[in-house]
Amino acid sequence: MQIPCLMGAKFLFKKRSRCETPGINRPTMRLTELLFIGILSVGVTLGRLNSRQPSGYTPHRIVGGSDVPAGEHVPYQVSLQYSTRGGQMHFCGGSIIAPNRILTAAHCCQGLNASRMSVVAGIRGLDERGSRSKVLSYIIHPNYQELVTSDIAVLSIDPPLKFDNASIGAIEFRGKEFVGGGVPVTLTGWGLRLPVPFPFLDNINYPNTMQRMSYHTITNRECRDRGMESVTDTEICARGPFRGACSGDSGGPLVTTDKGLKQVGVVSYGLVVCALFISPDVYTRVSTFSDWIEGQLES
Image 1 (cartoon, rainbow, N blue to C red):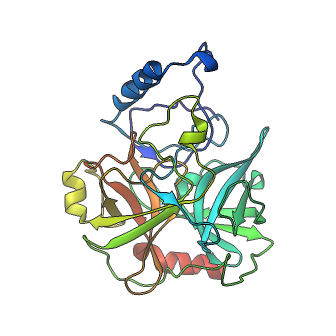
Image 2: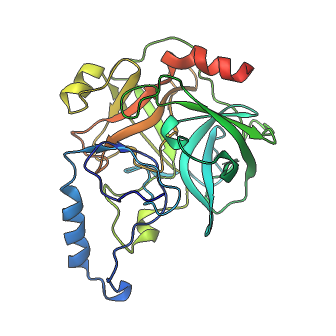
């Protein structure tokens, strides 16, 4: 599956591979050339995009985050990986909601071969072994429309994960409480640390260590006023200064901690250039779909 790296539309926060520029010699790439390419990339910020390319795609991750400290775990976070010629490649995030069920974004699954998908739990770094389970199948919400609504899916996995209450465990998602603006939230994932990826600087662009960052939700009205005109009450928005989600984070959990640890969002979409203060990130609002999610646990 090949999709251009830069697209003049909304951007689904998911892919993890590299789009390379033909004819450029890696050792001779100068800083001025890198800056020039970066400036050109900024030119696509008028569009919003969501994209997933498990083969031939560009990985992006959390901007403005920091490494989860060594020895610390985010037990509900998983890496969705896809089997490619180069091996297992991270392309989306997800959260554990039961030993054999993973919550993620619909756009992380649509059109993909489930037999080539797996999830890895209990890791801080993508180079760690962790606990790997195969994806048996996935269920996409029946009302899903890309960049419109219901960007949510549930994966069935085998073998079931073994919870140890330290490195692997489930996140609470149940409840109908509507999260408004001004609520502190935390995002985790393996996300790009710069607003745009610079070619040939993979070690800077794409850290293997899980990132974590915090910011605040905004009201949906403010979200629409700031350029996300199609946002509905089935979604939740957040933003902060030079921080936010990027592709590769897609499907990952947005959580609150003020009333106990709870997942309130699933990473969905945002602007092509990530973490601009003027542009919010858009998440699927978990409370809207809690009954549907519970139904998938029973199926």
